[in-house]
Each structure stands twice: as C-alpha cells, then as structure tokens.
Image (cartoon, rainbow, N blue to C red):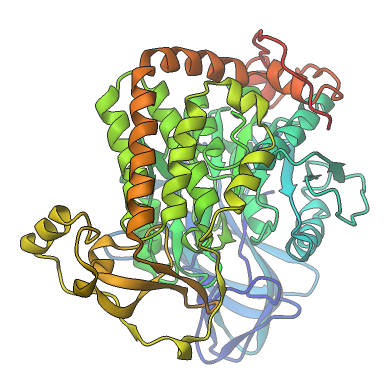
Length: 617
C-alpha cells in the first residue's frame, strides 16, 4: 500500500484549532502529547476537516490511481462510515465497515464509489462500540506511484534560530525519519547569517552562505540539489518552516502519483495569529498580485469545499511552500534578493500548479511587516514586470508606478513613498544595477537611515486619545474635496483635526479615513506594536516632486530601458549566471536517466550567457 494522506491529529507542536483536524462528540477526546483519539462507548469523530478530509477534485484532476482505502490503527470496535461533502448539494454516503482493531495491526478498509464524484471532500465518521482509541488513520492506495520522486527541501535562513531549529527538528522526526519516506526526502538549510548551530546528518545538510537574500539562498540550495544529480523535485520553504510536516508528505505523494511531470504544488498560507484564517491558497499575477480564496475560515466545511473549487487558475505559488520538478525549469530565479522572485519563477516556467487543503504553512501578516524596505522591493518587481510586458505601454507603466507611490503618500507614509521613487531610479540604471547589487547592502543601509522609518515599536495605548477608523461609505463630494485639496495638504492648518486616528497596520493606510487628521496611529493589535504618522506638508510635496522628476526621466528612456531589461532578464535567469555568482559550486551533473520527472520532463538545459562577476559563497 502507498500512503496518500495521513489524517493529522491535534498535537502540542503546531498551534492550530482542534476543529481543523477532527470534529468530536462529547464522548471522544484528543490526547495531544502522544497524538491519539480516545473514545467512550458511542463516541464519534469526523474527519471532514482541513487536515482530515481527502480532496477528490484535486487528486482526480492530477492523478490516475484506481483504488482507495482507509487504514486505521488503534484498539477497540468501531463502525466506520465513508461519505462525501459536495458544494451546494447534499452529502453522499459511500459505504460502512464494522472493524475490530488490535494494537500493532492496521486494518485497511476499501472505499467504493469514490471515482464517480469528480469533486468534493471525502471523509469518514468513526463511531465507537465500547471504549477504544485511534492512534493513526490514513488514506491509502494499492496502485504504484507514477514516478520515483526524490524531493530536496531547501530552507533559506537568516537570524531566526528560535524559529528554524524547532521546525528543522519537527521535519526531521516526522518526515526525514518516516519509514516510507526515508531516503526519498532530504533537507538543505542555506544559512545566510552563517550562525546556525546545526549538526548535519545523511538527510540534513547545512550550507553557510553569503547573504544574497532569499533568492540567493534558494538558488544556492537548488544548485546543490542539481549537482548531486539524484533529485527529481525541490521544495522551497520559509526559514521557520512553520507547517504540519504532513504537508510535505502530501506534496510528495501528489507529485509521485501525478500524470504530468511538470506538476508543481503551492502550499496555502494560514495566519500565524489566527491559524484558521486563510491568507492565500494559490495566486494570480496580472501586473499585480491577486491572492485566491483569501479570508476563508478553514474550520468550516463550506469554506473547505469552496476553496477546492478553482474559480480562477493560480499561476504562481509563494516560496513559503513551493514544490516543483527540477527538470522542468526553463528559467531560474531572477536576482531580486527577496520579493517577486517567486512570482517571476512560477510565471516564467509555466508549471501546472496544484493547491490542496491540508498542504499549508503558517505565516505572519504581510501587512504588519510592510514598510519602506518592502515598499521598495514590491515597487521594483512590479515595475520591472510592467517593463518586460511589451503588451503594456507607457500609460500602463504610469498607472502601476502611481498606484505604488500614491497609496503610501496619501496615508502619511512618506518613507515608503520615497522608497518607490528609489526603486524607479534604480531601474533606470538598467540591468547592471541588479548585477552590481546582489546583496542590496547599500540599498538596505540607505533606507534604514531614513526618518521617520515607520518602525513597529511597543505601544502604550493610554498615551493616545484616539478615534476609531471611519466606517461610513465615502460620498462623491468628499472624494472631490480630497482631490481638490490634494488629500488635505492644501488646507490651512486650523482646518485639520487635532486628534489621533486609529488605523490597523496593513500594507497601506486608508486615504479616505486619514483625510484632515494631523496624526494617525498605525497599530498591530495582536502584538501591541505600532507607530504614529503625521500630516507633513513639506515632506508630502517634497516626495511628490522627486517622484515626478524620476518618472519623467524614466519615460524619456523607456524604449531603451525596455530593451536593456529584457536582455538582462534573459541573461540573469540562466544556470550560467548563477554558476558565475557561486563560482565555487561544481558544474551540474546529468539528471537521473531512469524513472521520475527528470526523465520524462527532458534534460536540464543550461542556456549560454555572458559570464558575470564572481560572488564568493
């Protein structure tokens, strides 16, 4: 039997709601320290959850196995009933089994009729006949895998020892040492801070590396996987790798049974503060990022069903969890340092993308972390994309740049607005800027020197007399007034409100809400941190003038810059470019010629490129 999915049980290692794992009646309870489910007579448990259900639509869309079983381990007598939840339709029961479980033995129960349902959530209900315990539950198939997947996990680390070390230990115990996965999955940690106290093993490798950001770290790990010549797939993960390890195992199983060797798996992103809150489950990029299914509550069955239906097809996946075939790479990552590298990589390589309930990571709120540096990075990759898209003219580029600049400026985030202008000026230097600033050290130092810096600091809320955010819809007259007065910066000071407006810290403030306020308190409520932004006429007009000047100069050279950046993009997304960056890394070996995505996907190509300056690893 091959394992497709393990039903994850609530545990002490990952802080998520119990109803994302199981739904229990009052006569059943979960033991968290040594995960198990205990039942009294008549106790019930349902697996129609984020980590417990089986996504029929995803598995059948990408795989061809014919058999499906539920495998149970535990002690006691149970009645197991298998059903399917369907979106907008009634539930369907597929079958029922009475089973007597004995310690140390697994009972494999066949599931029939599931192939007639092309979408929906398959689940099972356990009813205890007397006291009992369930220690593990799995979805299995008797069919062989379509390809031998050898998966290399790459984690890029920078000064987050408290997060990465427990995560590495979790992956080691639950994935690298799992009997059916041993020797098929390894973990490479690229340490950009060169300070990680980690003992390598046969399946765990540590690579000290110069800090070239997430892009450089992931690429350094990918080069190592290529050079070993035994890996069919890579999985990029964030340095805290904060996920249920089962997400990795599920991605491995999905890739192993996939029909298409170019299949890639994009993990969803769940809120670290509210683990049931979905931030993104795949995304699209059409000049700007569009996260899919954002805001869904993954404790609800209807939300689980909705999120498995593809309303829009995703075309990129974030590198908090992105698994892909190594032989399917047509373009390697562009040296962005961070931000935008994952978007360009997915879109350029045109993988067939799959997302699935139960494959996810937990992450911090992006809005909380947003500031001048991230504004610079976001503006740079959005503007470069607009430059490379020859279907879009100068007007589209202006809309893009204006949106990036005005949103922070109108909400008193002058340093973030200034960062957009800086990104524009750096792009005007052509692709040479990226080659000469791989580590962005000078850029980071310059932005760090700006004041106010929009830094999140501990708050004493009693020191502020605040007014809550605006809740009424904005009328046309008020919109016109904001436009005529340039967001109130043309108004005399006595017409401004001498109170502090409270705003939730997000990517951008709300210009409609901050209008006529002298000060705005941007607060991140869960961490009780924030900062105050002030109405500043001098800075507003200063940043506006600098942006207009930079954009006018940019437009004058637009045809030339388009050609230069197209050549630069073609050159800096090749394996030769990254070989030159990491000149100490040996030349890649041939990919495996036997089974697997490497064989079916074609040989790995190394396009010719002009040699680039060496950066020591």
